[in-house]
Length: 340
Image 1: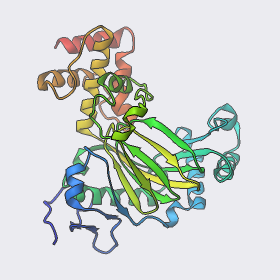
Image 2: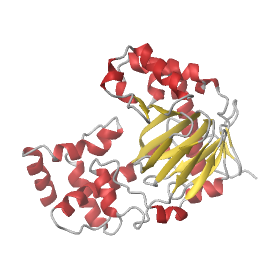
Image 3: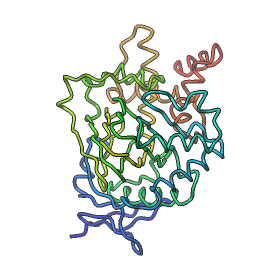
Image 4: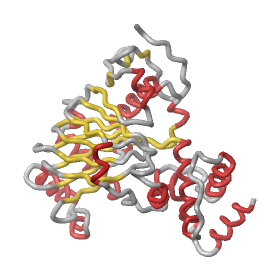
């Protein structure tokens, strides 16, 4: 039985949604999910569903090498990250290589070594990926029943390529994320966000102050996480700040991440940032969500010194922090904002 979905304004299409799948007129659906589970767990608990991108020519190695080459030629070195378990391919030696050699070294080592390759925001480098990103966001908007096109402040499609048995260490991310497995298989361990005994507030404050390794893995709490077996056709939702780690299988893995920032999560980040400073001064700050007035004051104080039209996650999260750390003018400006 089809479910009626309210009309959602924005730049993405709003296709009809059934109990099991989104249907876009004139093209096949990408996502197949239970709408009740999706809406109950979206951005609060991890869950998995299905996609039909496995086997797409957009994610074959020659096509990905082509877009990586384009990104390098555009000077997007910060969006092309390649690392090895033995040597950091993103070190000075790697940067000095010719573009073709950078790609050749990385791709050549994928099957035989322990190499991890990340291509961030491929949608900005190639319009085909941008069209696909918009289509997926449109389906996610309908599945969630929320006007994502109005709530999202930044979105991106990122591709991960990993050699057999490569591990991605335990960490958290600010963005809401949907991870699509395209080729190969791996295990993904995810915890629910918002559990202070797993990730205490002080670790979240440090994360939003720029320490991206702030979340500390505790083996004794692993049983409270869920391990998802990522195989081609599987999508797993990572809510914002959900702790996770990844263990690749015995084949090369290709995964696609659809990640986006949202206004309410961005505002919550500002509360953690102010709390970070307050804790440094010996205070015990109130966590987000405990005081509407306190949260509003903290959000406003960071907002007053943040970039007015941010275009990247770094600008969204850290433009205010960076200005607050500019001595002494920005500190004085921040103090004035708090007093107001």
